[in-house]
Length: 245
Image 1 (cartoon, rainbow, N blue to C red):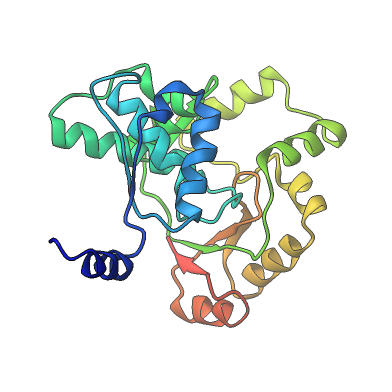
Image 2: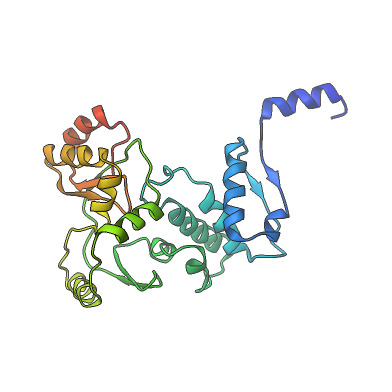
């Protein structure tokens, strides 16, 4: 195309397509995450990176996808980790190369269990994953119009809530291996103190008959066990983002 005016017109109609950069190779992972998120916020739909230099392609691609996510930020749903795990699976399937054992933990503590994509017991810092028997129960998940950073919830927990002893944690892990599930989230009291709307959402789940309503992760998203379509429809009047999972 040789007409400059026509070229500018076409570029304008395409919008912001993507960014090609070598710069991410030169900076720490935390800065790369922030920069990738900023690129997405500017309206670009793609980031192209070299795969023959710097970080290995598995780790680099997953790192970028973990920073550009559609699960609500600070929802307590491991959005970054699930994106990273999905990226690793896709890269592995396309390339035919198995995911290196050390890559998931380098991207995040939850990535290893997300990579498995099944009911599992995760121990240690996230590196030990054991599959658990049984099927995932039907859930109603209720995202809130609020955000909680994991760091602030952990700080609140450390300041006010006693942690379980190693013996208690070992006993809970063994119970899970035997198929006994204790529905508890140790971070829930801290999340509820920091974000009172959580209390209303948990109450709403109980009122429609959902079982074991609780906070997911560090919140503020909540969930309960239910496959009742009428209950979901009722919840969606107040919480439009509520959905089955």
